[in-house]
Image (cartoon, rainbow, N blue to C red; front, side, top):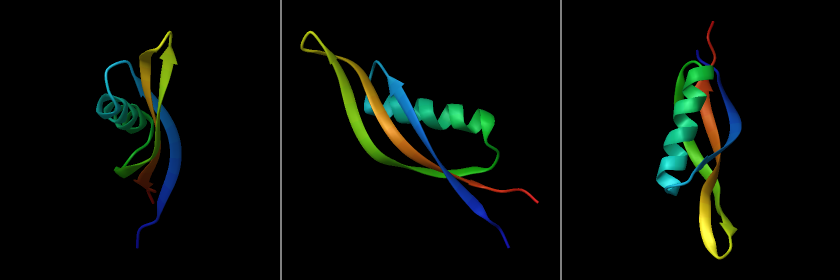
Amino acid sequence: MSVAKVTEIIAGSKKSFEKAIENGVSRASKTLNNVTGAWVESQKVVVENGEITEYRVVMKVTFVLEG
């Protein structure tokens, strides 16, 4: 039997939503063991002077608990 946990993270990128997702999963995997998936709950952009300066995603990351 295995038990999984879900945690919420926010990640960003100056390039794209896809890169923000990659950054979030990469960073979460450094701290959390056994990451098995993630889904994007929401997306938003930061705008300054009419220009997009950052893409942000709120993600739910799933990881399997050990032991």
